[in-house]
Image (cartoon, rainbow, N blue to C red):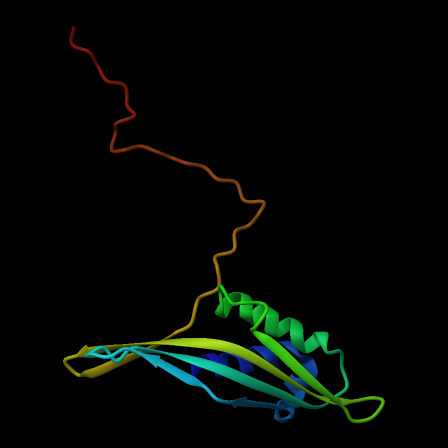
Length: 154
């Protein structure tokens, strides 16, 4: 479950209070499904309702949700914003609460037969290439001297 580990690492890196206290972030997969196809192909997809529980949290909920949203933009392109996230909060006192966020994610697994056995690859979408908005482009075309003047023998 590489996406679960990737999501957890992203949250810990982007929520300072959890970075200092990673034991306050609990992660579970509840009622996951595996989509597979009959035949010799062993490739499959995981559908994972990931439950993230942050205990005794005293910060803003946005400080947890925004890193999750930024992770989803990269790792779950094409996600359905109406069904991807849900949450629950339990107020512990005037200063802290427990928050539970469910993130519905998928993970594609490609299995290929090799002479040495099975090669298993968990596909994590890469971040899109970010271009510098101020960059200037220059196209240089010289197709092996085709742009050189042609001499006419006549």
